[in-house]
Image 1 (tube, rainbow, N blue to C red):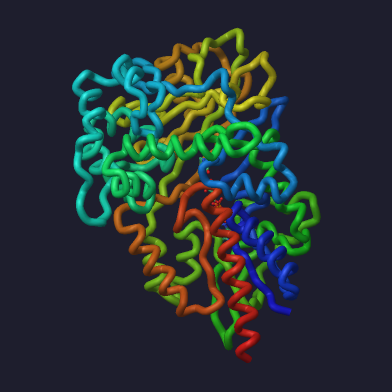
Image 2 (cartoon, helix red, strand yellow; image 1 turned 135 degrees about the vertical axis):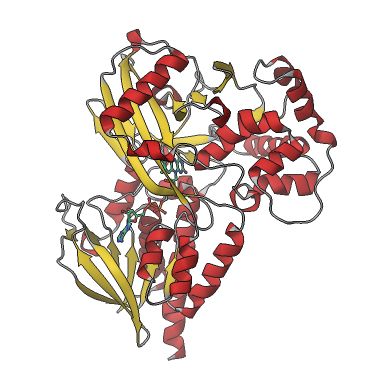
Length: 493
Ligand SMILES: Cc1cc2nc3c(=O)[nH]c(=O)nc-3n(C[C@H](O)[C@H](O)[C@H](O)COP(=O)(O)OP(=O)(O)OC[C@H]3O[C@@H](n4cnc5c(N)ncnc54)[C@H](O)[C@@H]3O)c2cc1C
C-alpha cells in the first residue's frame, strides 16, 4: 500500500489529510497516510479555548465569506448549521487618528469609498484627503502588469491619507505587514484586477457590489457577512476534521530532522519529542517517539516555509534558501475580559491603529460584540493584537508585562481602567508569512524546483494565500496532486 506522510498538523495539514483520505476512498485507491505534528495539539495557529464560560480564540477568529473553501469544508464535515455571521447590531469599526477614535465611514469597503455622503461627513479624513479619495475615479489605470507595493498602489490611486488611515491599519494589518514591502499582486490581486478591468477601484467595487446583490437575490438563506465563524469557535472545525481521520494515523509530539530521497521513496528522520511538548493527551494518538525513520512514497510539507527549509538544508540547499527568503513576522494576541458594568465600549467590532499613531498595539477587537456566544452578557471581551512588522520585539514581553502594556494602551485609547476578570496571552512566533514584492516569482521558482523531487509537495499559507480558506483550498489541491502522482506512477510501471 502507498504511504503518504503529511508533516504539520495545522489546518493545511489536516485538510490535506482529510481530502487525501476521502479522494483515495472515492477513487478506490488504497493509501495509508500519517500526519506528523511537532506539538501536543492539532490546529496550528487555530486555537480555541473555553475557560470559565469564555470562548477565546488565541489565533484566527473568523474566515472570509468571500473565499468559499472554509465554509464549504465546514458544511462537508457537518458544521453547516454552526456557521455564524458577525452581529448586526454592533457592526462598524473605529480608526484611531490623532489620538481620537473616528468611526470608519459607512460604505468604505476595505479601503475603497462606495458612498458619497458618509465620505463627505466623516471626521476621519481632512477635506483634501476626502477630495483625493473621490478623485480616484478620474485617475487613469497604470499601464503594464508589473508588481507594486501596497503603499505605492494606494498612494497612487487614493492618496496618502487613505494609505495612512485605512489601507495600512486595515488592509496591511490583516497580514501584520508593512505596506511599503507588501506585494499587491500576491497579497491583494483583486484590487489590481479592479483597476485593470474597470479603470478605477471605486467603479470596480460598485460593479462588484451590484453583482453580489444579484447573486444574493437569486439565492435563499441569510446574507453572509464579510467575516464568519463557528458557534463553538474555530477549534470546532479542527475537532470535526480530526474525528474523521484515523487516530492511529496521527502522531503528535514528533518532530522531523530531515528528509532523504532514496530509490523513488522518502526516508523521514524523526527526532522524537520536541523539547517544548508534553505527552499526547486523549484521544489515543501516537507520539512521543524517541526518533526513528519512516519510509514514504510521497511527503507533503504543510509546515511554515522556514521550517520546511530546514528539512532541505543538506538535500537541496538552493530550495532551502528560497524557502527561507519568504519572510515571517511574529505576533501575539492578548484577550482581556471585564465585567460589562465596569467598562463602556464604543458600539462597534473594535478599532484599528495606524502605524503613524505610534502606539504599541495594532488593533483591538471587541470579541464579545463581534460574534454572539463568546461570553455571558455580564462580561465583555477585548482582544488586542501585538507585534507584527511594526513592533515585533513586543512579542518577547513576558505575560505580565504584555498584559500591563495592553491595559495601559486600552486606558489611554478608550479609557478602560477596570481590573480584568481574565487575561490570556498567545504568542505566534514567525507564524505570519509576508508576501513581499517578488513573492510570486519566489513561489513560482519553489514550485518549479519541487518538480525535481517527484512525490514531494508543499502546502500551507506561505505560498498562495495567507488565510484559513486559502489553506483549505491548497490542502484539497495538494491531496489531489499527491494521489495523481502515486497512481499515475503505478500505471507507468
Ligand atoms: C494571530 C493570527 C491571527 C490570524 N487570524 C486569521 C483570521 O482571523 N482569519 C484567517 O483566515 N486567517 C487568520 N490567520 C492566518 C491563519 O492562521 C493561517 O492561514 C492558517 O492557520 C495557516 O495554517 P497552516 O496549517 O498552513 O499553518 P500552521 O497553523 O502554522 O500549522 C503548521 C503546523 O506545523 C507544525 N510544525 C512546525 N514545525 C514542525 C516540524 N518540524 N515537524 C512537525 N510539525 C511541525 C506546527 O506545530 C503547526 O501545527 C491568523 C494568523 C495568526 C498568527
